[in-house]
Length: 343
Image (cartoon, rainbow, N blue to C red; front, side):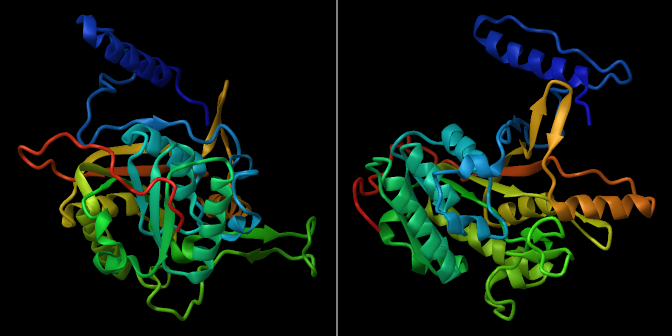
C-alpha cells in the first residue's frame, strides 16, 4: 500500500520542527487536503515509526545467531530490540528480558555494549539462548550476559538481588500461543505428500498449563500483569519497558492486544509513555514491501474471498512504559552488572 505523500511531508516537517526547537524557529506542518487534523496532535501516548525491516529477518540474524534460533515460533526481530536498546539506554546499562526465548534481546544488548540478563521458561530455549550468548562473546564483548531458567511470574525469587532496581530497560514480547505461524513446507519445497504443513509453530509441550503460551486469553493477561509487576521491581527509577505486540484475529474478530497490554502495564504500576510502530516491511520508493508469511497471505486471501477486506500486517506495535521517577532521587548511573563475567 503506497505511503501518502502528505504523511511523509508531515513527518519530515515534524522532524524539522523538533530540530529547530533550539533556535525557536517553527516549521509548518502540512495538512491532508481532505482533513484539518494536525498529525502532531495526539489523544494518547506519542507515536513514532521505527524503520526496522530494511533487511529480512534472516539477513539480520545471519552469522550472529546459532541455526537452532530459527525454530522459535515467535522470534523478535533483532532490529526492533536493537532500536529500543540504542534509544532507551547507554553503554554499560543493564537490559532485561523476562521471556527471553532464543535470546534476541540479550544478544542485541551485548552487541550494543550493554549488560544483559534474561529469564526463559522452556529449557530448550534456555540452551539456545546460552549458545547465542557464547557466539556473541566471540565478537569480543566484555560485558556480562546471562539467562536464568524459570517462570517469569516468579521474578522476585528468580533473579539475584544485585539486579533489583538496576535494570534500565526491559525488552520483551508476550507469547502468542496458537496465533504463531512458524515455518512451512509446500509442494515446491520438501513436503513428502505435496501438501502444506506447518512446523516450528508451537511452544513446548501443549499440555503444560504452566506455560503462558498454552493458556487462555484472560489468563495470559493476568500472567503478563504479574510479570510486569516483577519487572517494575527490578527497574531503576525512570527505567523503561518496551513490549513488542500485535493484534490478532479470532474467528475474524480483531483482538486489540496492544491496548490490553497497556492496561496490564498500568495495573503493574507503570506509566504508558509511547505507542510506536515497528515496521515489518521494507520502505521502498513507491510504498511498503510487506514480508508476510505463507499463512498470513493464505488467511488474507480466504478472508477477502468471504468479503472481509483485510490487509497483510506491515508492523508490530511497540508499547513503551516507564517506571515513575522517585522524587529527589539522584540521576541514574550505569549498573555494575559484572563486566567480563560468564553465566
